[in-house]
Length: 117
Length: 112
Image 1 (cartoon, each protein chain N blue to C red):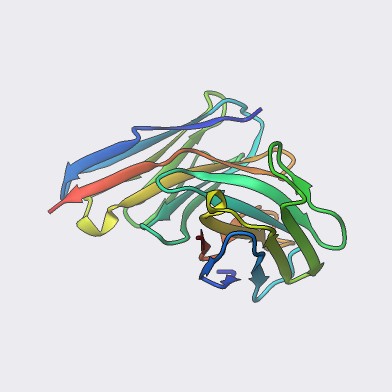
Image 2: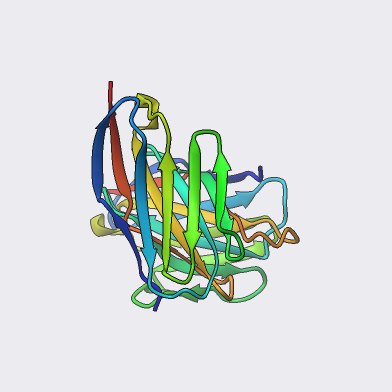
């Protein structure tokens, strides 16, 4: 199956700093990627849809100035958590679909655990 | 707005039993439905994908059904094993194939 990677797998940062998380599709090109966050023992919440070459579409309640998304190439989307605070600590997961298959199957990255101290 | 619900939230059964996990969704205009498994602290593993035109999919001991008209899907696990212990998530992709909405998950524990 298709492979989606994320980097880093975990990161610890201090309050007020910014953290960048990368999501890569390793064996296919993805015009659209999705970013989710997951709090402990909760389900995944869609944050935004990342579109290659255009602005991301954010879900209601997600601050676009705080969670910067850049989809500069067909294989890479980045999520930058700016001025991070402890409440931003969470598990962040990205996903992508392999185009052309028509199945719409989503392939998920392994996730990035962010801890803000 | 699509809402996805999973019942039960948690389930504990002895090894060897067959079990059913339930997923319901409010808007039947879906593109597909996918079942995932998530181990603690890990990412998602795709188990089964059912297209909107399909009724069921099978993979090994797993069988997933879809009844779009009633807004329901079930994941059947046969002859459960301790290694099946995980959280199971269902996710619905809307008809425009633009968004995926996840259910809250069922935490499954298989007792040896």
